[in-house]
Image 1 (tube, rainbow over the protein chains, first blue to last red):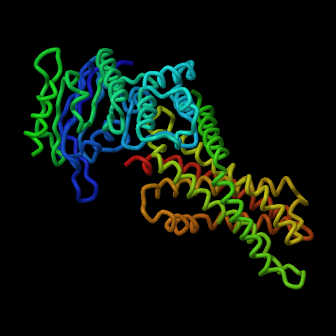
Image 2: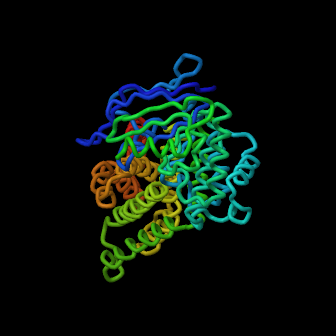
Length: 240
Length: 226
């Protein structure tokens, strides 16, 4: 199943009296990487939580489009979503390989072991490290494992919350390559980030959230994505 | 993947994680054993066991030790947010719940392997006279505790005072299970057991478990999705 578009209409989320999102309208497209920018507390993680099906909106609608028709939320949809969150989402007592093999079985992947090893190679987690319990990992190693977990089932929709956090230059470069590959394979990619440099020339779509509202949305003019200085300028103009 | 395979994958994961650290098992077993030991000081006077206390002591040890394990099992999921990882997967939410509850039930049953003989030894209680009925009582009671406990532990997952709130909210709901468990166990310890009464309480446990499995499966998703 391919998902062409992800559309949210009048999306609102309240936690008690606090309004985290206010009537957000947004469409994400396959083959386009969207950078979701905004100051702390803007509602970016909440939006990501709703798109990943982990959080229910207070009001509004989300639709996942496939050839013009909608895909129902459920296990089939969840199998197409990959998430990298603030927390690691892996079991500290299991090794990197065991974590990926466990999640691979939940996603009903064939030849889970080979897929796990290949992904760990891609994210740059060395051979010795991948057989240690994940709780012994540094922040950067944990981020690499979390990224591998998000990419494990080759999802149609990638939702990444601050994915460059804790990564060294090599790790950031590897992640940027993964994102470029996902974009080329016509995936829907949404990245929440404060770090624009790795996303330069990859970002086709910029959305700026502030106090739960979309204050700016822009698609890149041509095939090439936004440059670093363009992203920085947009961020500073609409968040300060 | 079939439903049963999903559940077994999740149970096996919990067992594997626990056998690496043995944190929950050791804590539960030690706590339950200490409860039995302390009660033995109080209820054995001059070599004589106070009448009728053994079933209550056994079930108190199981429930208090089990609560510790329940709390810790869900804390573990919260620490790395792995419950969210499970909810993100295509695994059915029902399977996630049952996998968790069965895993906790297994941990409690392992602790019972220590606690039940300890009670039998310290209090001279003929608990193993009808082993199949004792096993039925313990299995049904333990499973019911794990199911109900998992619902409340999931509900309190993101609450600050969850360690205090869990027993406060859980124990009133467990009262029927505890009554049935202690009555059945008490029946087994009588000189001339009334088997029809024992069977009645075992069936009671079965009905209790069935009701709360249905309630739990219907409410779990709404408890864990924000």
